[in-house]
Image (cartoon, rainbow, N blue to C red; front, side, top):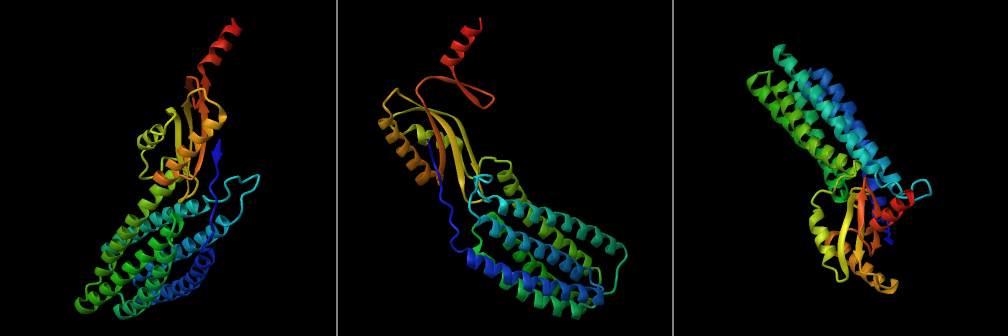
Length: 313
């Protein structure tokens, strides 16, 4: 007995438009930042260029994921492409971690071999970046309903803060003449990137490994189901995420030996509890009226085991 959750693509057109605009704006800014970073000899600007390249790839992955998520289910993809966005989020965050490590290594190298930078050019380009990244982050915040778009939002929000820090660093170099501010600023940017990425990696990896969703308590769900009248016990309980917004559940429920019409009422009550109290709308529930034993994930009725053993002798 099972209940299927209907997939919704509401707002996908707006999301696609936001991502398309973000891709074009980010590509233009990457080119501007790279050229300016080379002319100003600023590692902070070059770090921003590298970070924005990863942002472009992140937005591109999110764009592709949104497209795939709207595709219907098929015989070969019975759950559709709900995890396309989760996979995109994992790749995005993992890429950011690698970039943060590269920025940190380059910054440490520059601390030992300082390079003269042009703070005014740093500040002008960074100001344009704050404006662009801030607008994109605000647009993404309006459509960030899942881990895929939330990872893209974190990319752009982190860029907004780090680019604002470049402006402050450029002003500090202009006032004091201390070029070491540039690599120190790069280390701070790297730390910010790393911090924003680890949480996304952890959450997306948990979904890909079909772990229990964050904030979900199996004992609470089992207790809520066992409170339903007619349920003796709940076992072989599994809960996972199909995508970042859809939870699924499968379990075995022991009930009395009653007619199917009565068990159907119990099923309705169970699904009501799962949907209204735990936000689980896709459930597969197997009813049993005899004791059973779990063997490596396969549930075998004890009476059938006994019959099988007696036949083998």
